[in-house]
Length: 78
Image 1 (cartoon, helix red, strand yellow):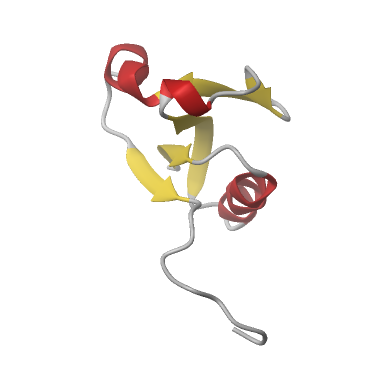
Image 2 (cartoon, rainbow, N blue to C red; image 1 turned 90 degrees about the vertical axis):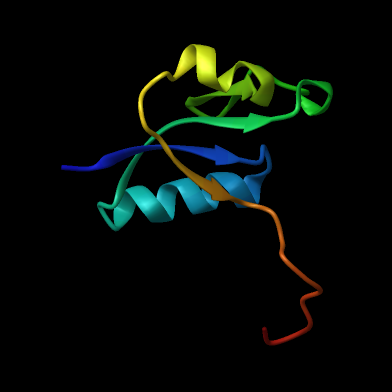
């Protein structure tokens, strides 16, 4: 059974991550989340973008989180 997940990020990179995770069959993506001040659209493609401050209220079950943000400087070929 796939685990539900919310991805922290609201960029096209975040969307690519969601599609990759779904394609692998590992997760069912419920939404994207960012801090409320960074929400510019209510949805990213077919998924809602939820304020991070509301995640616990909206998704009160156990969730897996993924970050769609970079963890360091990337150079060519990395």
